[in-house]
Picture (cartoon, rainbow, N blue to C red):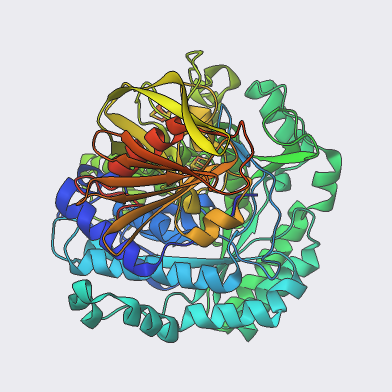
Length: 638
Ligand code: SF4
Ligand code: SF4
């Protein structure tokens, strides 16, 4: 399994500031897609007593996992950021690929893939990056609480023992008061960015949590967890409920008969074991009362994903179930909202299910807040899809002549039953409206592709990036060992046609598979394009993967490369125009600019017939020149 490796804080800071200055983008999100808010409107909402400048944000999932993801959400407009769920068991083995966005939206991913200590640091880094973006005016306007106030929402799971564990308690305490972590990261700010050390970074990161439970978690355990978090830990709590609450008959009728998802199969046991309708109402009553007595607020979140049988081919066949999101879940969850509203109109609800730019304003008009999203942000455009949600909301507010969200909800006067009926009848939520991404029947290779760049924004972690090379057509010879000498043999050719190339920063890639789904070519960018590791240790640890680690030492550029499972090393001294390339058996000296060999030597005991693939040298040299070009900022040259 690929391991996510957080980037050092100085790298993240340098990258965001350099990219903003040189290329008017941050982590590949163009500045023109940043959400800047409108001075004439107040889109803020209050959640658990805190103000968020708007109700939009990522649901706990892949967009709230790494520090750069958190910043990207914020730049695109998220002001309620649900951080990815943490749990006591922080050593999960997650099947890969884990995201299937071909049509509906399924996943088998789970909670935070980082260790608890790493996720704490990552979330604090994310918060500090937001503070830097605010303070340095990276949005292109002065810091403004009306448009920038942001809630970070914790998400913990999944059972009572885990939530009560010392590890999770201590983790929550460190998120409530992250002063120590902030100071440690402040000390890491390098001298060239020393001006940032004096910033007043936020330390009270969060005092609210969304509780996530196992599918099938008993009702009394859910309640006990919520009570524990409220009473013992002192948090405001949102309890996330499952769409199974609607009942198998109703869910199946909607899925199969109304929406046409006849291939999607639910399992009776998942409905039987999950929280039942009456239990949910009683639990909401008791928890609301307890919250009031404690001076806190209880919210419910509708809904979690829907557990269904794994009937598709993307996930490993050993996975019996997968989790459905996207368009069908939107309709199912709206039905749940309407039913809940009738039963308990006073309970505040947050919403997450198939949200996109066309239904976000309706969700807000229903008084739902926050309204969070995951599936839609995994589609082409990625984070840059979010600003349109808010622009559409702002347009609706202006159309109704209102300034605040409260007035918008009142003026829109959207009847939940009417909203449900409209969505249920809307063809865009039906099976027939979903088309898989187009494939063109061509296979990816290390260099060159149709350069659609879809793989860059669809990666939630910002792992894929663009770099540029000099197009090349070069003849070369390999060197074969004969009688202890390296002898040139049989000419070959390397052709790199395009200037524009794609690479993957391996430390940020968890093999989720999403870029493969949307790439028009076959093979998967994360598998076929060059992978750059962030450290030599990571390159060595993941010896089963081809890839490179690039570093600089004493004026020389060093590349540790693995191609076709064989390890190579390249050292380039640009001032002297010298390159040394070796597979540890044969070492070749070359003039770097012209790529011409000037000498070869053979290590003792190298058997006759061993051949040094000079094509690898050429590939590494092209890659090195490309990724180290300072004109385009990327995770390697930062
Ligand atoms: S790797 Fe695929 S998705 Fe990425 S730019 Fe090339 S063709 Fe497009
Ligand atoms: S590079 Fe592709 S497979 Fe890797 S994390 Fe990004 S989207 Fe997922």
